[in-house]
Image 1 (cartoon, rainbow, N blue to C red):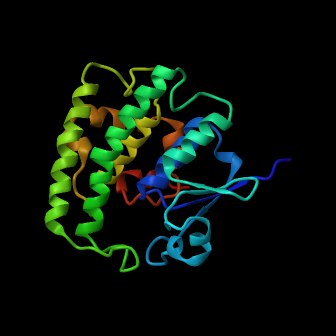
Image 2 (image 1 turned 120 degrees about the horizontal axis):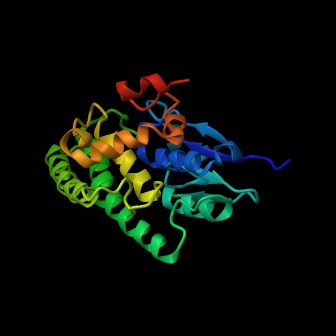
Length: 233
């Protein structure tokens, strides 16, 4: 029996490890890992030396490979696992699909999710002084406006009736990142619920909630969203 790989993550409220968690459930490989969920706040376990020895950036997710090497950064881990394990290729089957998925995922991550993440960190001190080193509410409001303007472009892309970003029958990694962006926008401290502002993002959010992968990925009860409390196991 092959020993399970160690996977260090954070509660489902944290969008980067949640992107990976949603991916492994959508891929059907979640049972291949021994997942260790860090106490992010106030414990700050991801910034303590045992984890920093694996990942000097002090972030999650971090995957420990069979040979003892480490792999981090969500997109990098997802790309490795998507190729390493059998099943549907979440990042796209053909070269064109892979290119399109990377294009849309990068747009969503850079211009929507990362803007909301930055807004959270510079406007709130909820994770404590180990992580929240900068307070800049004005920059946070600028990031909020940027996220909303780019969310409008994605909403328009979805308005042609497609269910998922690439127009296929199942979500790709771009849809996973968009799902976590919507979830984090709804986090109480962020108060920028994209599903309430955009019709087609709302439809995608509701569509995600019907999938078994979504229900499993948010079953930890750590999303910070009251509407998902029913998924806690």
